[in-house]
Amino acid sequence: MDNTAFRSLPGVPRWARWSAHAVALLNVPSGLWRLGLAVGIPFGLAESELTAMQTPGWGSLYLVFLTVLSEGLGFLALGLIQQWGETWPRWIPFAGGKPVDAAKVVIVSSIGAVGTTVYGGLYVYTTFNAEMAGAPWANPLINVIYLPLLAWGPLLAAVTWHYHRRTSRSVPVPDQAPLARLD
Image 1: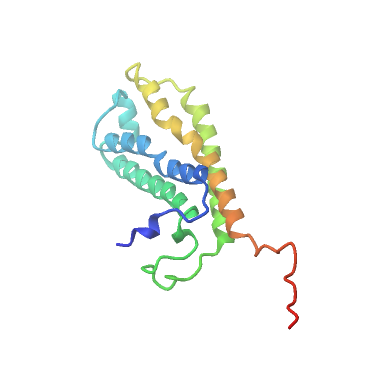
Image 2: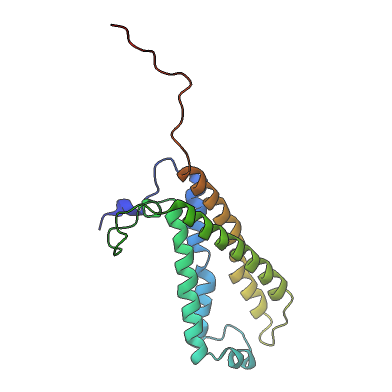
């Protein structure tokens, strides 16, 4: 496989590369925690809390789905700095090789940035004020695991802003028109 599709485009600043990669990785701690719950690791939660989440059981399917979805959405931030964010990969039916509509990417990514920022705020409000019935270390563990998600929205907004600036630039106008050559 050609790994040039996974490299940052030329001219993408270091801060944008770091931010996009951070967005792609921010979900890993909470995802691993959810997958652990899905297979029956209680992580200090009380039996009543596990029963309410239906884990292990049908709730495990939800936890796995949520983990895969959030990891996938985080991964999409890499498209804002890489070639596949400007040209559809060839393996995608009907769209492969065609240019990506940058305006739609900016709209969807901006909605994602606002949504994840609101989610982060709601997380702070609910989790830091919640009383867990399990082990005394369960709530601090959950706080540490989910805390990186607070950065998801602002980092995604910054990378989206850079993508918008990079993809909406028109051809720069030179300061002077070239002199006509008189022969």
